[in-house]
Length: 467
Ligand SMILES: Nc1ncnc2c1ncn2[C@@H]1O[C@H](COP(=O)(O)OP(=O)(O)OP(=O)(O)O)[C@@H](O)[C@H]1O
Ligand SMILES: [Mg+2]
Image 1: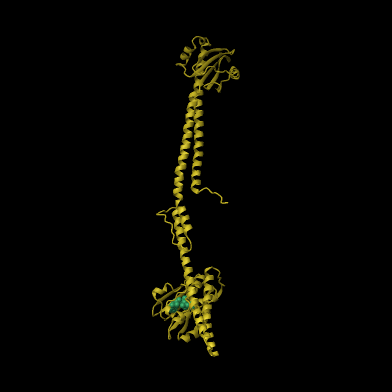
Image 2: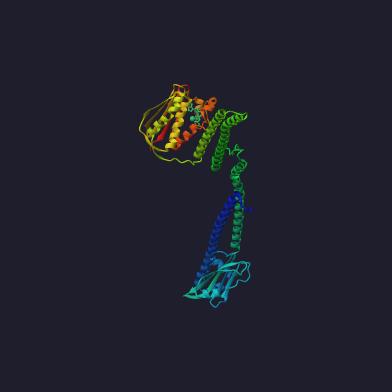
């Protein structure tokens, strides 16, 4: 079963919304509690100050003037008529001496526990939940000679306070819902806009196949991470396209290279079979076939070597190599081939150079290049091989006075199957010699370069590190 995964744009939006809601709830909770405590404290201060004024005025008059006109007495004592308050004086025996009730609530219950505490001289603050509206009440004993002569109770309605807190709560809830909702809506559209290029990349990736590597992601002018991702993706597709093209070209070249000797093989064999032939004729035909088979097996060997080199399957058998000996040996081996073509091999200025390398592969590289010099040279020409030490490198030069290589061809001669002179194709070879030589030089962390002037000659320069 395909498991469901929430799209990133939704995940982002919900995370933003959720975190904002949490922060707002915590912040509003703090503000609400702080506000509630401050309001309660100010109510407590108010009722305490009334109770204190009454207490001191009662002490002065020994409670005598209270029982006349309580309202006027309060007005005198407090300087104004107390509004929204409940005030009562209880004598030491628990009898209510005077009371002012400016509240809508009728009976205000008096708790015996509170009275008992007050009689012991304790000031008690309490919230009377049973009264309607709820009351905040202070019960304060009035002392004379350290004796409780009466108790004053001042209560204040909590109606206004509750109204304020309720309104604050509503404002906060509406703000939290609006802010979170707004963040979710705006966040969703922003996340959707941000994630759009990712979707474009996904759709482009779906369309890409080996036959369609022209697809590119267009993120006009974006320089951010997604823009860079698209650029990287485009560069990857371009590289893939290049690789596919090279593989295709390679297959075409290989087929072409093998097709020619196969066609010749087939033609020669058919010709030989057309009528009865003498032993001599059969021998000639078989020799010609063997030549083509040799050519094919040579191509296949070279291809195998290059494929191995490309897949990094090829390892160098590193050992100490005496370059002077190796170069002299190659020149000696090529001497007969040179003589057959009328090309002289000159091995001069061979310095004593020792490097670490794969002797067999190095021999193959030098042979390829000297062989080219002979193969493409003219009778009476030469191929000169020299070697010297230069800036920590062993520098091998192979110079000839052959036809040279044109500037158009020179950039491609190290490519596989490239032959500068197509008309000489059959004699020239498969066009793999220099690609193999280049790989061998690079595998030794060296370089191979060519300088050439058409009709004057060519100079191949190989540089190999000495340590
Ligand atoms: N010394 C040279 N002078 C003139 N042209 C050269 C010389 N060396 C190489 N070339 C040109 O470069 C091409 C590539 O050489 P490369 O050695 O890779 O292939 P090849 O000699 O044709 O075949 P292979 O070496 O595989 O038998 C040659 O076909 C030839 O046209
Ligand atoms: Mg060659």
